[in-house]
Length: 174
Image (cartoon, rainbow, N blue to C red; front, side):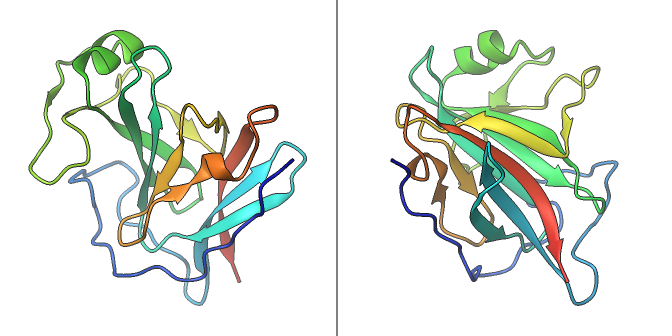
């Protein structure tokens, strides 16, 4: 049975452009005047389970890696057209980055205050750009959205493990 859907109505704080310290080809973006950008979380049938205000151009999704049993995080930057690109991978264990993601560059220690111990950019020869991303949000994986200035949002609490797939999209409200 699905757990109750929750919509977050407010985001605390503000976000400076480039929250993760990146300058990307997307450049600075934000909601068009009068609109608000949201990360919309829906199930496979298209039912909206959550709408999370995106006050800025970045968010991340953390999860417990099923092979290494440690936390990892994928960090995204959102473009003006609503597409989002993976711009950084972070993990608590080097093996997650080096073996699971197989990135070409060596991971480095995260800057002070980061949630994870190591970071690295994804393979530039294989950009990961999404309009919609389907993810499994199991209790074991504990997938969680992090939006700068907001409390973490536990996606895995929206679904049961027998039907854990969710879709993440960026939408703009009028």
